[in-house]
Length: 112
Length: 114
Image (cartoon, rainbow over all chains, first blue to last red; front, side, top):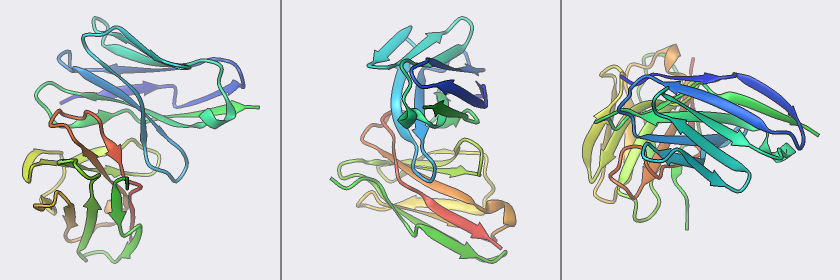
């Protein structure tokens, strides 16, 4: 089955700086890669996603890049704000599967 | 519009007992999935249903079962509870029959097994 590795596990940045979280996946046929933000005690919320036929997608301060050859994808947050502090999860769907496989999460802390 | 609603929000059970968790999807959503999230980890897939049919099952023992009703709500049942079943159980709904796509998660049921 699919395996997703996520790094780093914790990340601290100064307000206004950029944050980058990286994930690798094992199934070369995986075709959908969402990112979720989970604030403490709250539900995971989809913040951005990308399909395998696209290399990059941007939504305001958030962007995701996908490198199919290397089997990795990254979340980029620019001009970070304190409200960006949360745990971020990457995920992938393996070929022919209904199972969304999540990484172990990155705790992002934005220091004012 | 109401989001995905789950009940109960918190539950304490004793080892060996059985538990039923409930999920109501967003109106119009026909797909419901269940995930287990252990503290400090990412969610792990348990089941997915679409139009009352089981589409997928994760690597969980047969003690875990689920079903989807004609109104698209769903129940997750866990028998013979173990301490290791303590976790946040998340339900996600989607209007799409596309794996993983367009999920909206509920706030979860926090299950503690003592």
